[in-house]
Amino acid sequence: MSDESREFHKPVRRPAELFDRLFAAEDPAEVSRVAHSTAHALLARVRADPDGAVVDRLVAFTDENGIDDIAELWSRSPSRSLPGALWRLYLLQLMIHDDPRTAALLYERGRAELASVDEVVAGAPSPAGPEELVALIDTILRGLFEGDFAVALERAAAFARVQASGATHIADDYEATEPERASSFTTRALRLADYARDLAACAALWRRDALS
Image (spheres, rainbow, N blue to C red):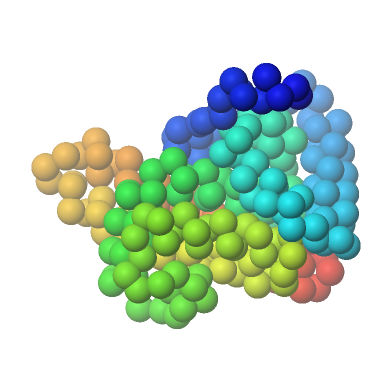
């Protein structure tokens, strides 16, 4: 890309509703092959030599390019696979970056309501405002490339469980007065809970050298 085109390039942003978007595949077998091969190649290459500038670009990828390129590679992979785990981590990051205020609201409500160690595992400060959550999800994603991969997945799973708890309780708050908004938060809570289970399962598979 030339300096001139880079100067006028605008990041492709995608709204948080893409959190549960699926992309069509003309040849599912070929898409699966490409998804797994690219995920393994990317992770192996970066973790073998975790150059800071490369990791920075990977962490900032969706901010600069949107989510479509990643979606075309990984969105239709099984939830408990390496490309499936990477896809869910990028979606969590996108959700936080697109609406950090709502994410902070959900996190603080979930922290108050959820009787578990998840907030400790996730590693957010207390209280966790919008900027802190953006920094946290970026740190978790960075851990995939230059830290303990299973720990990064476990932190992401804990983060998603806290968010799911917050979304569930806020949905209850709105049920009587704003049912459509309540339904939206309920949908988000269910999706986050699913992602938490999948990411935790992926962490366990990684520890057994069985995450394919």
